[in-house]
Length: 534
Image 1 (cartoon, helix red, strand yellow):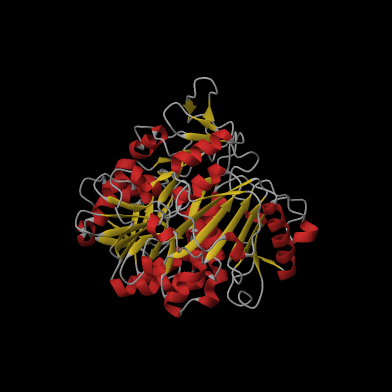
Image 2 (image 1 turned 90 degrees about the vertical axis):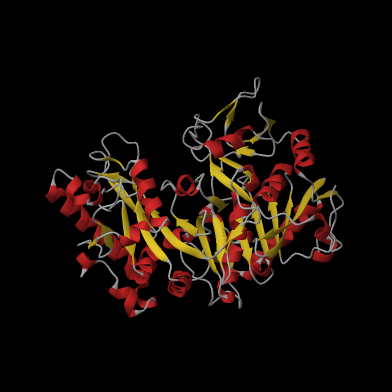
């Protein structure tokens, strides 16, 4: 048992006759989880769990309470769904009643945010020991001396066994899962799901709501520092190479997922990492692979042999979205304090399965805001026989599900900070070249790394550039060590007419998606819109 806060659960109106275990460290939490039958200890040390039917976020079951605090500050819609205050009160009453009946509760007092001026005190109350271990791993862990006087700013109550009643609690019809965020009461209730990532993303949502009012840019991105103290941030949706490209032996990792950009620093919101595990290899991701053989790592929905305790990272029978959580210091070249200087480069990653975008392009600040608000990637439509057409995905700010405020709030913050710091912005396509999916081939990782290195070390700035006729951004004509032919996507296609038609279609999709933001951006950003759409 570590230090227990003098600000106990009773001061929060939480009553329980059960055994409350405060701020346990990794080993005791693993022992508790094993005793409770919550999972298995793997041969090489990780704790392995299965999360049941929920192997990812339940986006349609997340709600924000609509009240005087949030009515005009939250961007209401498909992502941010409103919950009536009376429904939340009924849910809260039932949550507290359920808590009072638990024989054991696990409480962790943690920080969201590594820069002290901008961090949030978060108390998490769990019924599962492994959930408590997960969130302790993912958030920033206070020094023991700070725990005695810890007072939470926000409280998360996480009860996987709780079954929501849509009629009583205002949740989604037919669902027993609910994630309810109340910014006025500074409380988040998570019920009916064992997927631990809901807790992590709830803290991200809190900071995404709070920080813009303080002039700090919250970002769904990875970040690292070069040998000369130059910080780079990497935006990108799943499958674009964000984790791979930011985990560079020659650069120091600040974090892999969630950061803030203040006047003085880029700081990690977290103290851990949450990486995809499916088909992870020692060759492609040596640093991350090594964490699968460490005590203190939690593996979710990774298949394990119950007799030998061998894990199989290639087996997707439990989930394609198998995950591993581990402290950031498990990565050898991680930052000691989870922060670095303000960035010199911003990288927008996209896996363009249409094969239209160049492997790298330089963006103006207005174009950067345009692409930030667009949040584009293109995925293969699926595994159905005969289906080869890609599908465009637009996730605003590269993290729409976690952005409570209007996207323009984050876009304008980004644009201001880019302009203030003279930050160089790049669009990097890790997708297809020589044709769309099914015709062309995946962009060689060696090409991507060479172009990225040239951008980060500054040498690419002196290259000759051309203006892309479809998107209006600058594309290098020649880069040392890279075949110039690959820099022009149209030149890599055998069928030029097919390229032109595919490019025109993608431009159209960009323009249609951006229509929702036109009234919320200035003339300069509207003027940075796609050339071919004019």
